[in-house]
Image (cartoon, rainbow, N blue to C red; front, side, top):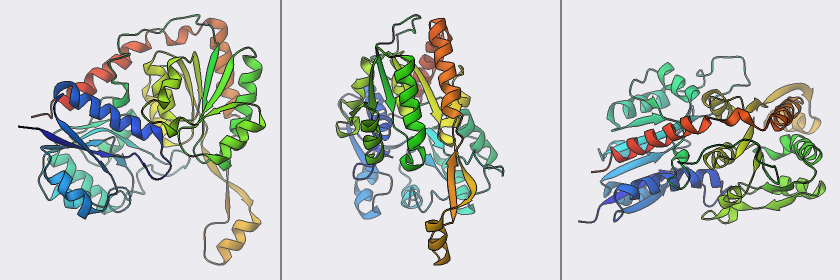
Length: 366
C-alpha cells in the first residue's frame, strides 16, 4: 500500500520565496524518502486555509512540521489551523523547531508569548511523536515555557548525504565569495554596502557575487551601486543553492546561507540580524558570527511621527549597531591570515546534527 506523509512547510512560495525555508522542507522530504523511497510526500503551507489543508493532512499516515516557527502568537498568525489539526489525532512530529526571540531588547525574552500559544505548545509537547529544536536558545525557550519533550538536534538542513563525509580544509585560496542578502533591507542597506566594499578591498582578486535568498529589490539595487554581480537564487529553488558548491567563502546575513556553506565545508561567517541568527551563533561551537541587531533610536522620523499621530504605526526609527560589519570583517581577515584553522574539526558537530535529525525523522516513519 502506498504510504502518504505530509510536511507542513514555512516556505512562502507566493510571498518572499525565501529559499532557506524551501531548503528546510526539501531536507525533510529527502530524509523521509531515504527510508521510504516509494512514499508520497505532500507539502502544505503553514497558514493554508483549513478547508484546503484538511483533506491532505487527514489522509497522511504522519504529519511532519518542518522547523516549526515558534512565535509569541503562532496560534493565530503563523499556524492558524494548528489547533484544528491536533484535534484530528493524526500522528505528528516537530523537527528542528526555531524561535526568533527579541534579543535586542532588555526585557524577558519570553514575555511576549500569549497564553493561547503557550497552551498550544504544551499540547504539542504531550502529543508529538518527536519534538526537536535547532538551536540552544530555542531549546532553552521551550524549557522556559514548561515543555519537557523537546530536545536539541541542530538544523535539519545539515542532513544532506551528498556532503556529510566532507571535512574542512585549511589554506583554501579565496577565489569565489558569496554574500547573502539581509532581511529588512531598507534598514540594513548601509551595512550590506559596507560589507561588500570591505570584502572587495580585503580580497581584491576574488569573484564576489550577491545571493538573493528571497525577493529583495532594495539589495539588488544596492549591489549594482557597488558593482557586485547579483544571483537571484530564490528564482530556482531546486538548484539555486548550488551557488554555494563552488564558493570558497560566504559572508552575509542569511542563516540558511550560513548552513548551506557550512554543510558543504565552506568557510562561512554570519551577521546575526535577530534571534534566529543569535540561535545559530550560540549553537555552533566556533566563533563565526557577530551580533548585528536593530534597535530603536531616540530620534523621531517626521514621516513616521505624522503616521503615528493619525493612529498608524510608530514614530520610532530603527537603527543598526554600526560596528557589526567591522567586527565581523576583523575576524574574517584574521582567519584568512591564519589559513582559516578556526574551522578545523567543526565538521564533527555538523555530522552529529545530520545524524540526530535523520534518526528523529526516521523514527516517525511507519
